[in-house]
Length: 256
Image (cartoon, rainbow, N blue to C red; front, side, top):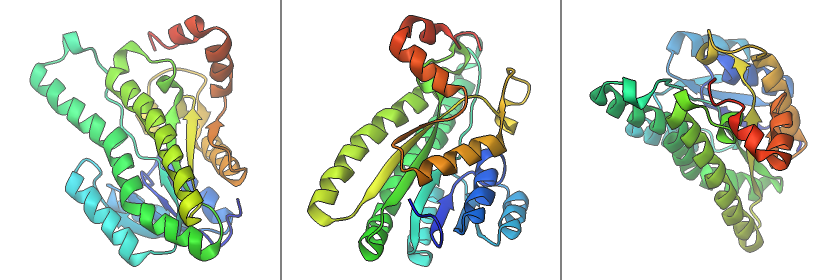
């Protein structure tokens, strides 16, 4: 996939993988449109890559709707959507106050599962129109985790949202393949399966993390290669184990 002169919309771009993706796509000649909650850090990233910042809170469905409408109206040239934003709330149900648990489930599900799907729906008309106009494929890139394949006990909701996103992507890909046959709009749906990445979300947890720079570099290379599923770093090993020894892969991160 040719990236030069494209406009890429990246969520979660205030820090971590989203921020690194802004730099990597900009280096490929893309215009970058960035969103996140932290105005100061988001603006800093946007300025560094000569991009555009839109402050938005994905924990709010109303904010997601407004964000989608603004991007569609003000940036009709967007041809790549990257859903990078995510949160992870670790804990055991049996050890968490029910009221806090209730709120945490809603928050984590909204950011990690509902918001990405909502943005797919809100921006699909823009992505389809760009593909038809330019006669080039558009793309939706949903960042995921090896925990979608091998969940851990302390992150039940996070793992469930990531597994659900994989299933959504598969069905959504079927829809868009059928739509392409009818309309000619070529919109690709790409899964990114990441290992543990050294970000604020994983601070103090685990060893052997890859850098956000390495993760972003691998993602952009995979998008260029038009792969439906991108396995980054050590997640490639998990892919093999999941096929050959599923019992082992299912236990790998149980106590992570």
